[in-house]
Image (cartoon, rainbow, N blue to C red; front, side):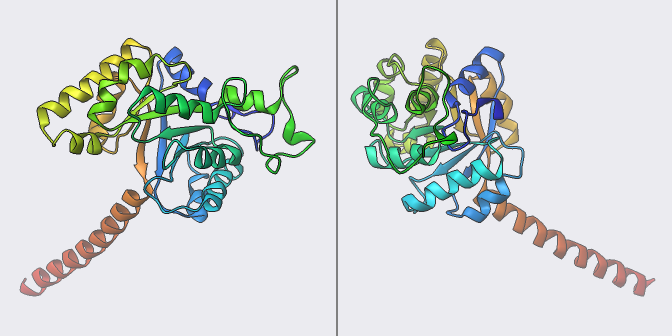
Length: 283
């Protein structure tokens, strides 16, 4: 994954190219969902073999500073091998700018419902003339940090590298999806199945039809899908359906399951020993 790095590790890696390569090479990127607001956890994750990490700023009470520290920890401790992606609370400029200034490779925009919202998201990610992202004078400093290919600035590189991933979580989003998919600058689409189900009254038929429509339109317009796929039995089916960025583990799930498995194994060992001892005494 380090082949997607900019010329300096503090600049955003090229998630757009990484996404395009999954389509070109018929591959997938496998990642981790960071729901715990912890730099220390990010240090551990950086030592693993994940390709990318979602830092969830929508459902985790992160401060902008902590979010930036998590992004930079993932980048520095993995030596640029991991690409952080932030699910921001909204498509407003502030969180998008903070995430990208910290070095994230892309943004997931939750509850994307209209073409206007998506265009605003893309504009917030791109520097002029493609968008209206604001120059940050306190992020990168003269010297190696501003390195860029000949004829380009680091701002050009950032606009080229940073991906925009709208998340579809409502009937209105599904209704407008075909137009959204045709907007230049949309790199992939994520489905929020639980919120989508809630918006559709948790009607199994309507939900299934909506997800099928999203997957079908994404294939039609050549956009890969992004999803949280924790069950091993679903991974191949999701891949065949066009999911090319999958988070298959999440810190809260791994921690809970790991604790429960370890405790249950300990209990079983002691109980088995006690059974064997009782049987030995009987004999």
